[in-house]
Amino acid sequence: MAELDPAAKPMAEAVAVEFLDSNPEAVTVCVLDATRIERGLNLVLEVLERGHPAVVALNMWDEAQEKGVEVDAETLSALLGVPVVPTVATEGVGVDDLRDEIAAARTTSTTTIRERLPTAPETVDDESVAPSTQDESAADDVLTPAARWDLVDAIVEETVTYRETEPTLSELLGRLAVAPKTGLPLAVAVLYGMWSFFSAVAGFFTDGYFVPLFDDVHDTTDDA
Image (cartoon, rainbow, N blue to C red):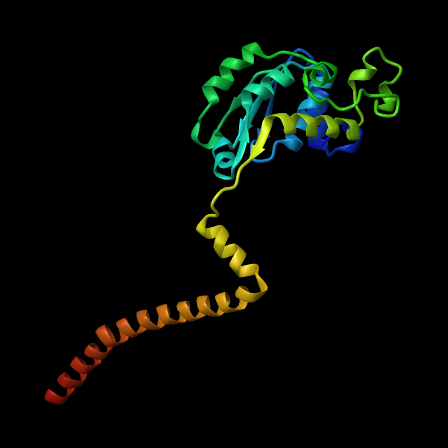
């Protein structure tokens, strides 16, 4: 959902745009993937350009922390001018806070956001304003995709930091599996391990159950 353009989007997104336009006072809860907020921020800016009151939920907050992605939610809220709440939807973390913040949802503008940034992108000109809105009074607040992405980059620079994290066991195995020098030996080792495991299991049942069973049957037949 990079653009809220009903003419260029699938039916579901076109319906969403139509709903927003027909309910201008409705609060929009923008759910962002906290592990990579860039694309979500682009959508948030489009919602704000349309004048909708909004609240931002930074979902998957726990995964972002594990991956070394640190989002300054307080600074992000100050720059956007709307409430920002970290959440972990699968565990219900932050849901109550998000519900409480809906009452504090506000409208803002990209012009105001640019003014809040310490180092803001250049002020939009005629080429960076969306053509369909250049003759309207709010033209300066509706950006072209390129100008909007520039603003997203500036916001991310001020609010997101990335730190080095120790790779997990699954990540290490994944890297070894695709590396040219280790991929084939690892595959051979895995296949050998599987063969050894099933051979051991088969040997256990064969020597521990079937051989004694047939020996007993053989002894009984001899006795008869």
